[in-house]
Each structure stands twice: as structure tokens, then as C-alpha cells.
Image 1 (cartoon, rainbow over the protein chains, first blue to last red):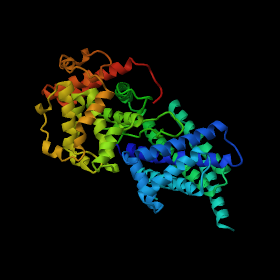
Image 2: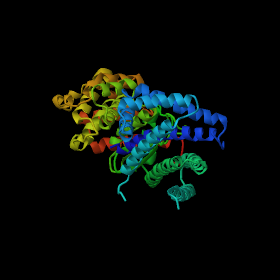
Image 3: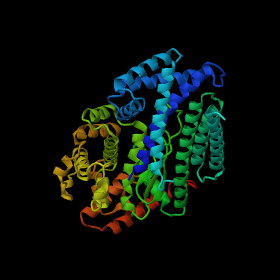
Image 4: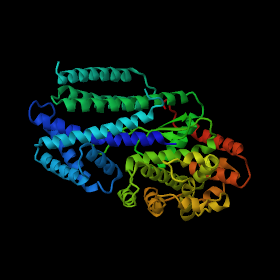
Length: 131
Length: 350
């Protein structure tokens, strides 16, 4: 009878992905202009995103959560799985160089939207009555 | 008005609404300092995201930050509601005993923070608030319920819920996830089944036959309820636990329950049996010698203080040998635990 534990865990997994991509976009935005975060926070955020994208590529075929996330993101972007992986590899390299293209920006936003959508669905399932 | 301006206005309104919700959550009085600290920690984290949303010039990013903040508060609302249920349990004089049992399982599985036990409508746990692989590290918060009308003899089943908390902290080992995908079982329902069977295995490692006997007696008649997609087949659960009991506790379950092995073998993740046993052995390297429990079957009051594992095993053995019925052994276990918990550190908190 641990439905709630699963829903919390699954929503948090998705929120975890969303926040790492969001923080990277926030960091990159500040590098181009008005800085509010200190250098260390900016660097840490970008390093975490770089690590996440590396792990995404490395484990997408062995981690069920990443596998499902990749599938949904590829569908939403109308990409083949192999094309998505190429885009993720490119995104990782661009983040390592601290300068991203429009295409990488679009990719990160798509991952965020997919992950947040999944998290919202899990949170709603925890409630006894839907509005 | 341009569409961007409309969106910005909506986002500003959402930020204002979220700030109001946060202040409301902060204004409540909580009867546990650890829970109050947890609420504050989540609030601070959410505030920082709202500040980022206000400062960003990217309309998409602002929206995504608001959604994320909304999710944090939504989950926090859920935890606050569960905590209020837990606060109601403070009026129940069985709570110190429940805490004693839950904290014992918690200690045996080496969980990083003490859960909040309470009486609910079933056995469940809420899990840690944040999955902390990439996010800021918040202190985990676990809330664990036992069924309010169940007698104390069944409370050993909380070990399964504490097992889930352990899985929140350690995650599912990579090799198990990889094998699931390799066999075409990568979807959510199989991951959930794997979590369930791992939690059973951890529970049976720490409490042995007592957990198994509780599980069988509590759920056998209603096992159909546990055969929905997200649970492993009931007899697979029994079979896997019985293997652990035979290998590590030298306890043969054939003495008191017939396991339908053909039904068990139909479980799609049954191919992971040996790996699951190995994982749980790694987490709980040693188990109590069952012989220790046998000598206390006729007098539970002589069990060394704090040995919840021996207490429950001796009690269930007494039932299985037909010496006492469930009501009598529940009374005996309750009496012993009441004595032990009375001598523990007093606590006015949950």
C-alpha cells in the first residue's frame, strides 16, 4: 500500500531533471548579462547539467526512468531517438564551453516541459479528488 | 497588449499567489521541530526559485520556474496534510510503542533520518521529499503509517515501509535496472514491482519469520487486492521471502503455508530473484539467529530489552505452535513493548 511513496519518488525524479536544466539555463542567462548568482553557483549549476547530460547518454538504455524520459522528449520534439541523443551530446559539449546554441536551448526547454508535465501528473494522482 | 505581456502578467500573478501559499504554510504551528525545520527548508528552496523567476528575462524559463515552485508547494501541502494526521495520533496512547517499533526498523536499516510514525488507514509511507541526485540536498523526511485498527502483532509490517525509505536513499542498483530493460520490462509498473519485492526482502532480512508470518496472516485472505499491476504476484512475494528465510534464517515456511510455486513463476520479474537476494544481503549483512527466539516463546517478558526482532519472532512462533491466539499474543507483545518504551527517553514530539 505504498502508492504515495511511488508517486512522490516519481514526481521528484522528474523535478530533479527539470531543476538541473532550469538552473543551467538561469546560469547561462546570467553569464550573458545581469549576474545575481556568484561564480561558484553558476559553475556548479553548469557542471551538474553537463554531468546529467553525460549520464543521460550513458545510461539511457539501462535506466528505465531515463529511457521513458528520452522517449517522451523525442516524441514531443518529433525526433528519432538517435537524433535526440546526438542533440544531447551536442548540448553537453556546448554547456562545457559555456555557450549554447538556440537548438540546445530548445532541447533543454523540451526536457524541462516533459519532466514537469510528468511530475504534475504524479502529483495529481496523489490527490483524492481532481478539480 | 502583446502575448508576451499577457504571459508576464500571468506569471507575476502566479508568483504572488505562490508567495501567499508559502507564507500560509510558514504560519502554521507544527508540533515537531524537525517537521517545522523541514517546512522552512523547502520554503527557502522554493523562494530562491521564485526569485530566479522574477529576475529572468526569458519568458519560458520564468514559466518553468513557476511550475517547479508550484510542484514544491504542492508536495509540501501533501506532507503538511499527512503531518496533521500524524498530530492526531499524538492523542493515542499506543504512539510511544509504535515509535519504538518504527525506530527499531529504522535503526536496523540505517536510515539517515528518523521517520514520523502515525496511525492511518493502511500501511504506507510518503518517501523522501526530494530526489536528491542533482538538486540541493535537503534533509529527507519520511512519514510512516500503520493501520489504526490493526493489533500490535502486525506492526512489524512497518519494516516494509522503512524498506521503501531505504530504497529512497540507496536507489535501485544499476544492474537490476539494466536487467529489467534488457528483458523488455523497463516500464514503470515493473520498477514499482521491483521496489515492492526489494522492500519485502529487506523487511524479512531484519525481522525474519515474524515479518513473513505477519504478511501471510494479514494479507493472504485479501491477496487479490495486491495483484494489481503495480505489485508482484502475491505467491512470488511469498516464495522469494521463503527462500531468504530458508537460506539465512534456516526457517522452513512449508510448515504453515502452501506457496503456489506455479503462480509465483508466472511473475514477470521472477528472473531477478537471485539478484534481489544478493542486494538485500549486501544491505543487511547479518541476521538474528532464530534459535534465540525459540527459548522465549513461553515467556516474552524475559526477552532482553530492545530486541524487537526476538520479541516478534517469539510471539509469532507462539501463535504458529497454537499456544496462543492473535489477541493473546498481541496483548503480550503490547505489554512488553509498553515496558520498554516507558523506559526510553521521554519525548513530547512526534
